[in-house]
Each structure stands twice: as C-alpha cells, then as structure tokens.
Length: 209
Image (cartoon, rainbow, N blue to C red; front, side):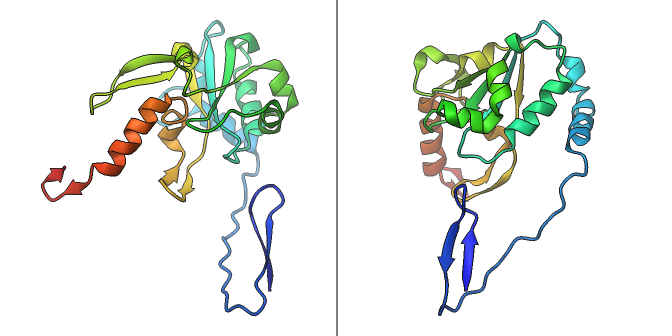
C-alpha cells in the first residue's frame, strides 16, 4: 500500500506494503460557492458589532496581522477580499504584519508566496520581531505580575484586523483565535513567561498551586 501524507509543499510518500495499517482519511467538505460574497457578508454583519467597513475611516491607519509561513492560510485571497472592502483606505495607511511569535522572520520570497506579488508590491509588509525591544511597546502587566509588550506598529494603528483560522494543534490544543495576537505579535519575553506559567501552574482540587 502506498499513501502520500499532506506534508510540506509536495507531500510525503510512504510505502506501507506488508504492514497492518488502517488509513483514516478526513471527510471532504465542499467549499464556499462564492468566497468573495461570503467574505463581504461577514464584513457587513460581524458577530456582536457593526459593519467592519463602516468602522474604519479613510484617514485611519490599519494594521493587518496574518499567520507566518508555517500556517497554510490563503492570505492572498483573504487580503484581496479585505482590501476590496476597505477601498476607502489608502495602501499607505496599511501595514501587514506577519505574526511570527517566536518563529524566525519570513524571507521576501516567502512573503510573496504568502500574500502574492501584487499585494507585496502595494502594501508595506513587515515581520514581527518579538526579540527586538525597539519594535515593542508596553501594554501593561499580566494577571501574574510580569510586563507584557506587543508589536509597536500593531498597537499604534487606529484599527487592528487579525486574519487566521482555528484548527487542531499538535501541542497546544487549538491553533488560531486569540493566538493571532498572543503570541503572534507579542514579545518573546512575555511568551516565555506565559508558557512557563501555563506549564507549571497545575490545577488542584483546591485551586492552582
């Protein structure tokens, strides 16, 4: 039996001949009939607030956070839909931030792969550098008492938009959601302090120890 795992960009072939193996495959779900229309509807009627487009003025600065190269989000399609809806905002007022967390920076080639050559040319694209204190700004203290710093350009933007998805994570439960901001655009120091606290604060019958 020969199978190809969805790994990397070209897959990982495996020869399972002679092994007692059961292949468990995911159930295929049909995609959206019209991605752009569904995106517009979500922008017009977000959960719990007014239209996203209506909340952003033409002179406001916008920071858009996307996953880095390790997350297979269709950034080019999503950003194209987003900027079509935010056509009142000049590209000069937009910064796209790759939420690297503690990961390495994306190369220019990877940026073009992630967002496409047209978006990379028109919009300023930067890597979050969690270890660069000059690129950080303090936002307060955690409930555990340590200082928390976030990406300065993310914090100083008038509006912040985070793109991502939620999927099972092989180490941390689920990937996505609030993780686009923390650890995506947080300082390495805050990430490590949170991680250590999360690992070693063990719930007991009487509460956390």
